[in-house]
Length: 176
Image: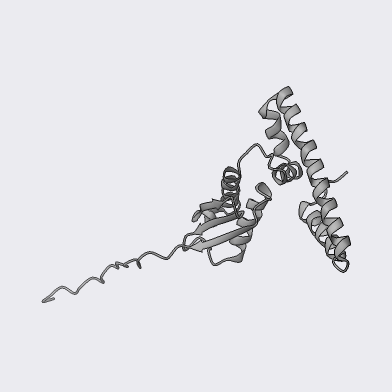
């Protein structure tokens, strides 16, 4: 059985809740149902993580969290064994590797854990104006930290212009 894509599942849930918006009572009941199910599954996952940790230690919990679907579920319930800033840092490293020399000027400024916003600095000349660079960074971060709500980019100002020094043409010898 192929695991569902987390983004597709989230979109489906939102669409189903929106379809109940015509009837406020049905919408409230639907939201309550989702909330109760989330609490139930979250409690079950927390118990499973505790059992695995007791039986096999943190190494197995980390192996489980390496799976994207399991990682998303653990993060959703605040059970991921690796903290958010560390996972975001790994995501930035992944983006740099994927971008090759275009990724050299990418740096993590900060992670706002309260808002779920990641701030990334792009140095001039690293393709900072490229949508592709930004998309690769967003994708890499979301793969390792699905709870991130937004990735904001700051382009660092260019430094002073380089002074070009050329070679003078040979001067004619005086008196020749």
